[in-house]
Length: 107
Image 1 (cartoon, rainbow, N blue to C red):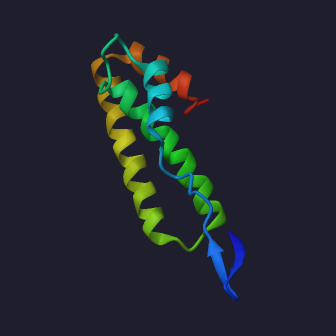
Image 2 (cartoon, rainbow, N blue to C red):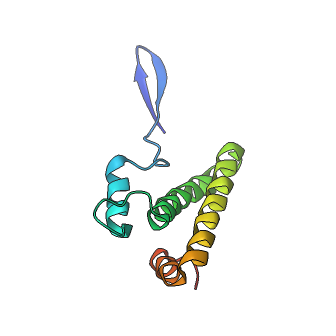
Image 3 (cartoon, rainbow, N blue to C red):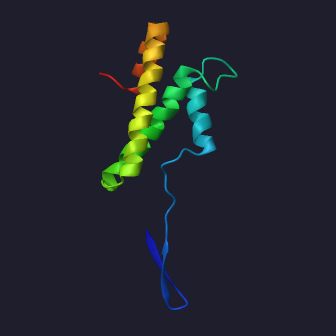
């Protein structure tokens, strides 16, 4: 957070909050995890997007420990990613193992 003096008053200038993914960042992730040319909604792509959002939100919560609204959002994202990964494991374990390895979720 920066402060500026304008007309004798101190104003706060909020820095850009990097919690949300920009469209360019989303496209990069989609390009990396897509299954075919027009893939934007496969379980792999959705899980990868959620993983990046979870990573960013976790960094935010390390700085703002009392932000319980964001913490709830984080828990919902983690649950949604778990459901997607469970679905993928049930349907095609080979794709599941490849995605988990790519995302670095389990050791």
